[in-house]
Structures are given as structure tokens and as C-alpha cells.
Image 1 (cartoon, helix red, strand yellow):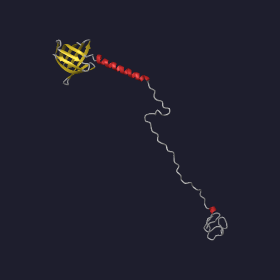
Image 2: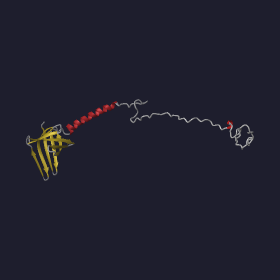
Image 3: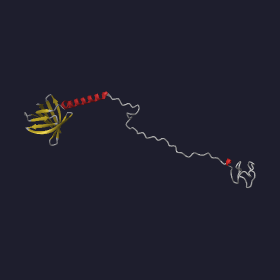
Image 4: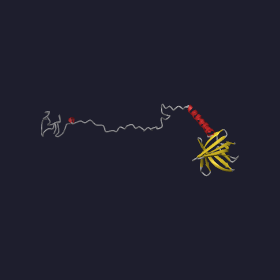
Length: 204
């Protein structure tokens, strides 16, 4: 049993509230709590999930800004770059021709042996070649022909600096130091303790 005014719990068969003194004999049913003193609870709104805005992932451009990007300025082309490239190619071509026909000694052509000499340990020997006895033909494609006593043999040749390397048909080769002065070609081969020198003249 409770007081209808203050809500105090009362003893059984109490006529007055021991807390507020109110007469409770005929106004409040036994064990009831008046509606006006029942605890009031503010209604709580149901939990509602507020959706958050979704953002689509933006692709990452690994190759710099796209042309459609705001403020994108394409790199300006250098008009002189193409000219410099063309000039460089022309210079390379001219140098290639120079090294092929001048620095390599302009070996391309037909050469006939005129004289020769051999220096060896303790001695020296020189000789003259007979006309047509030894002929060397150097072609521009790196091939050639050696003619000795009317017997031709093909070879390949290449130069590196002042070294002439001649490869025979059998796979072996010989190295010569060479120099050209006018229409005269000097080939010098050093082998252990001897030095062989051959002088040739250009016939065509």
C-alpha cells in the first residue's frame, strides 16, 4: 500500500501517510499507486541507422595528370630537339664514311707487292717481288682475295685502328700493322723474334 500523494510505502491498515500526513483511507486502492505520481519516462525514439554517404573510390593515375584534369598543361615540345637529332645523325654518317675510307687507310682496291724484307735474330734479308707474284684485293664489303703465283685464295678482313686482321678460309688469321702513304701500302707483321715487312703499290 502506498500514499497516493507522495508515493510513500505505508503500513498495513494505515489511515494517514507517515511522510506527508495525507488521509489515505478511502482515496487509494490497496497496493495501487496513483497515476499522477507514477514515474514518467520520456519515450525514447527507436534506434534508427542513419546511412552515411558512400563515396566511390577514385582511380589513381600513375602516369601523371590526364588531359581532362583541370589545369593540366601538356609539356611544350622543343622544336630544336628534332633538328639536333637530324644533325647528330648526319655527323655520325659523315664520321662513318671518314673512318671507312680514310682512317682505315682506304684499303679498298687492288695492291701489288713490290718488295719485302725480314729482320730476324742475327740477320736481315730483303727481296724484290716479280710483277704479279703477289696481289691483294680488298673489297668494300670486308672480303678479299690473295693471289700468289696465280693461285687465288679468298679471305675476310677488318681494321681496328692501325691493325689489319686477315682471316683465311680455314679460320686462322694474321695481324698486320699497316700504313698508307699515297699509293703505297706497308704491311708489317711481328712474329716472336722476326719482323716481316711487305711494300705494295696500288694498281687500281
